[in-house]
Length: 190
Ligand SMILES: [Fe+2]
Image (cartoon, rainbow, N blue to C red):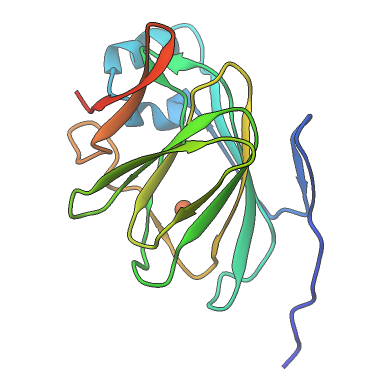
C-alpha cells in the first residue's frame, strides 16, 4: 500500500487563495436564496442582481476514513433583507465521527449551531478564536461585518453533508442573525 504523501497548503487572505485545491464551491444568491427567511428580499435582489455570497476551497485528499479535509471559506459582506450573508449550513451525515474546527483569519461573524433534538448555540467567530463543532451539531457561519469574512476549517473526509433541512417550509436553523440598529442580533427564525 502506498502512503498518501504529506503536503503543504499555501493560502492567502487578500486576495483569497488556497492551493492546492480540487473542489471550489461558489454560491450566489440564486443558488441559496431558499436559505434566507425573507423571500421578498431574495426576489427583490434577484430582480436586479445575483450577488456572490460564499466561496469555499477544499484541499485534495481522499474522501475516505482516516483523512481530514482542510478548507478555506470566504463569505462576502452583505445582507438579504435584515439577514446577513452566510453559508447555507449543514449537518454532517456521520453524527459520531465528524467534528469540525473553524479558525477565523479575517473579519467577524457568528456561528449558528443546532442539534436535531432542537438544542441551539451561537458562537462568535473572530480572529484569535477557534471554534469546535461537535459531530451532531449543524453549523452555519454568518458574516456580521462589512468586509470579507475568511476562515479555515478542517473536517473528516468520510462524512457527507446534509443540507436537506434548509429551505422554504423546512426545519431550517431555528436562530437567524440579522442587523438591528446597526448591530448583529440573534433572533428566532420568523
Ligand atoms: Fe461542516
